[in-house]
Length: 225
Image (cartoon, rainbow, N blue to C red):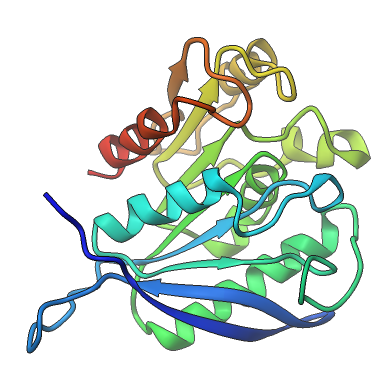
C-alpha cells in the first residue's frame, strides 16, 4: 500500500513560556472523501540539550505510524529549541509545554481521544504528564528513566497510566540501558483494570534505532491496532 504524504500545517502554539514551534500532519484523503479521525496524536522529542528536536527520525517515525492509522499527529519543539520561546527547564516546564500542545489539539479536534508518545527524554515527559493528559493510548520509546535530572525526573514515582501503554526498547541501547528499563517496567504496579505495559524489545537495536526504524514503526502499529 502506497501512502500519500500527509497535509502539513506549521504552527505556533502558545505555551507557558511563549510560542512553541509545531507541525500538524493530517492524513491525506481522496478528493471529496471525509477524514474520519480516530484520535489525535502528540509526540514528544528527545533531550533538548543533546540535539533533540521534533525532526528526530524516531519522533517522525512514531508520528507517521499514528498518521497511517488515520490520526492527525502533532510534533513540536520544547521551549528553547529552534523557534520555540523560552529556555530549558529540566523537564518540568517541558511537561507544561506538552500539556499546552495537547490542550491546543483538544480545541482543534474536540471530543477526540488523545494518543500520546515520546522518545527518550520525551518518553519521560509523556509518562510524567499522562495522569493529567489522560491519553487513550501511551507509547514510550526508550523512555529516559535513567538519564534525567531530579531523581530520574520522578519517572519512577509517576502515577500509573490508566490506559494501555507500550514500551519499545532497543536491546543494545547505550544511552538508556535495556536492563534498567525492563526492570523498571516489570516493577510497575498497574492501575486497577489496566494491563501492565506491553514491552517490545528489539534485540540489537541501539538508542536511535539505526537500521531498525521499520521494526520500531511496526511495533507501534501492532500495538495501536
